[in-house]
Image (cartoon, rainbow, N blue to C red; front, side):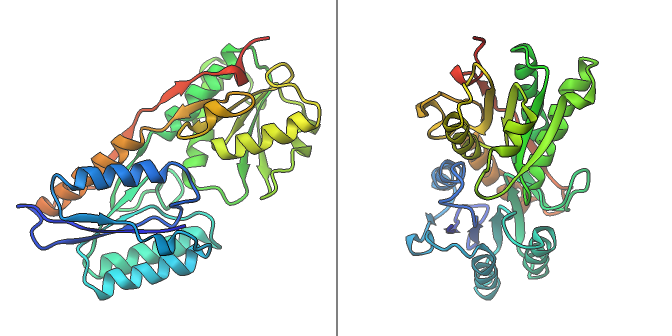
Amino acid sequence: AGFGTVVLRSELTDGKKIGLLVPQYGSVEIFEPICSAIREESSNHFWQVDLPTELLDSRDKKRTSELFCAKFIREKFDGVFFSPSNRVEDNVDFNLGILDRLQKAGIKVVLIDREIVNWPNQTACDLVAVDNILAGLKVCEHMLKQGCKKIAFAKHTTSSTMIDLRIIGARQAIHQQNLPPEMLTIIEMDEQHNPEEIIKQGPCGLICANDEMAADLMRKLLDNGIRIPGDLKVAGFDDVKYAEFLSVPLTSYRQPCEEIGRIAVHTILTRFAHPEFASIRVNLQGDLVTRFSTSIQ
């Protein structure tokens, strides 16, 4: 995990300091290109973007979040790009506490990639993310087109609100085709990604919460004699680094990481210029990239 500190300057934001609070940096693949895009776009408006490498090995996301929140408040930062961590105990309450402390200190906050609270609730701050309902819908639609009659959605027990939105989208895909809702089942995975429950349920399509989970599960399923895509079609989300290089190239819904980063910068610029505006909610469309893992055999 790690963080970046952004110090911004432009005619509009003269003298402002911005912190980048991303506890998943270095462990979730989408955040490197998102932060890189923030860095590049910031160079057109601001001073600099700093990602301290000494923090990238930190595994205590809760403590690191608290330390950086305290730093931003102590050093009187003006704004923060915040991606809430779901891999902490009582993650909703914890992240709301971080948000509350920042906002009470007068710091403008733009959420990136995910909301803190469960849908349909929303916090009152700005957000830039992929449209996760659409993402889930598109992946499930693809599974249905590939002939899948029984689909499982694998997620962590402590998954974030964005995963719940992807499940809503998958359910909507089934509903739109007047198919029975029982066609989609949710399987909660432990940290070891034990494939036993998937093998027991025997779906013909498996949607994974992200590509990292999909890659690990595919390896374990192959080791158990499951043929992909012959016995089981598998898809994930993100498509940043390694989906196309796996032993079975993975179908994945590509996140528009560069656009998320760039638009986040413009969102905080707008917030500084117009603090009276209602919350800005930007949900971007990604692309489904189909590969061998969901092909028809």
